[in-house]
Image (cartoon, rainbow, N blue to C red; front, top):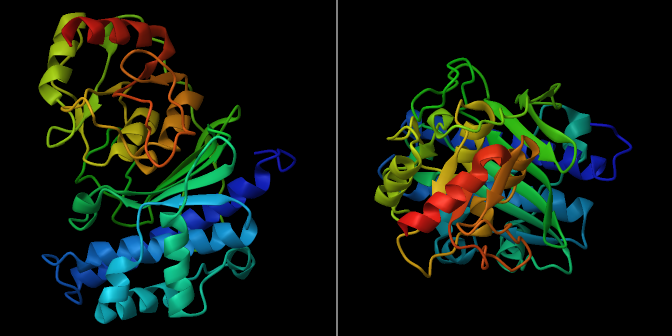
Length: 352
């Protein structure tokens, strides 16, 4: 991206801190594989979540100290469990980018207490229309993460309720297969980073251990008009979505079903649309009161939009990212190429 762009600094810091956090998560998985941590225990996921959140917030808060930060985790569990605290601190203290110039742009806490305070800074974040807010999910896909499947480290910048930057680090993403699958992982490298800047498009780069590698701009999604050309990504195991209703919608409009790609993590469904061969994702909640968490969608939504998709609630209304830690005004979601998005909205009206 043009270094004179008004969000050039934010993008560089975001991409670097996400890359560093993915190295941290990889370190945890190596410990599990070598038997240093028990896969049946929840602690590997907990350590990765807390440690990644501390490192990401540390870098963002140092570079942009006035900005609001919204993170999924708080430090309560660490303050109550000294063993978990020490493991998390050891991990945070040991992760650095190999490139000194890149590492110097970031920040790491110098004490355990500072680490805990950084984690809690994210827990206090609000994300409203009056501020600049960074929204992060340190490990999206905790269940699949511990199994060595697909997961993402996610960071987005929201300014006055509008997404401006989205960066998703996908350490296990394998682009050689053409279609995403939980078990089709990058075994030899560090996966890929998919990112977008509002009005500038979406990009992909390989991740490494040092400076950021060159990025390639992604092609726009084909603007299809026929339901038969829809290619769904979904999650059959989701406890919040009514996948039976998703199937009824596909049948009603004449689209292929069942879904071609099944992914647990919400953010990875945006990645499946960006680089994994899919072009549509729908979420019809099981419960009328359900609202999605900001960190499950911020950034991923921007990537889809920059590739020519429309993202809306089930009624076709734009998603408002300035209503707090949840997408409070958004009941359900439809993500699809702009050319056919309206057909899906009308179909939803007919089946629910």
